Length: 259
View 1 (cartoon, rainbow, N blue to C red):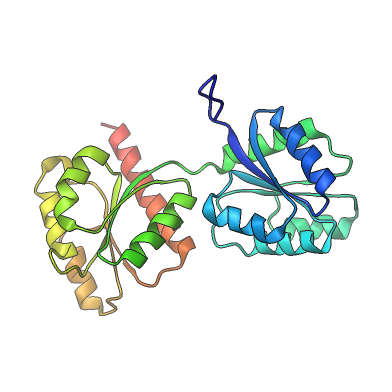
View 2 (tube, rainbow, N blue to C red; view 1 turned 45 degrees about the horizontal axis):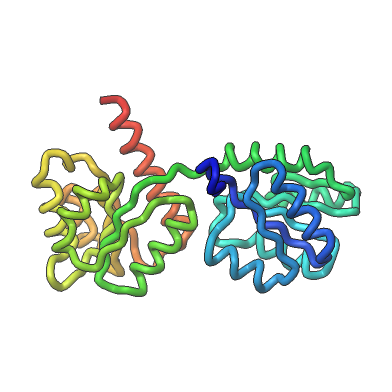
């Protein structure tokens, strides 16, 4: 964020094993209103993504570590940000490999920074994830932290609570667009909590998604009969979680716009 203007810039990570190249490209991209962080250590680069996911990454793939970095991008769990490759090699085979790995661009050195910036902005705009407000309720601190991290990394605003008795206050203040809740909680189980939410006419249509290790179909159907919208089984693949939550939150948001 620019402290003087109050403007938020897109966060972009640049990785290159070449310290000079990483520094120069990082500095150059900052002139185009990007918040840019450069990396030369692959472990620091990976850790940074887990701590704070960027809106885009630029990878110098010419080194051995650069090849490892792009492999990590091709198999990453959270795929909400585009990866753009830069290289000194301009051959068909490398470009084809980049396409197959899902790269959103392939730039040849020396880099046309203005063109690279334009591609970054274009892909971020196209790939932007709506900042849905998701309320997560789970009495297990591990799962609560996991769901918070996965959904937050996908660009969603998450409020996490462990105590179901806080649900009404959280609904009123946070105004979620979806409630993601554990089914089995000792003080108040997910079904009871869903019924409490539905007692308020303002929350009749808000999506409620149950999460549980429960695999018996009859119990899942029983949970859905309370007015819940979906039932996801723990453990859940992060990609499936993001996809399920995004589609239902988007549907709810669109319905609200029509009123």
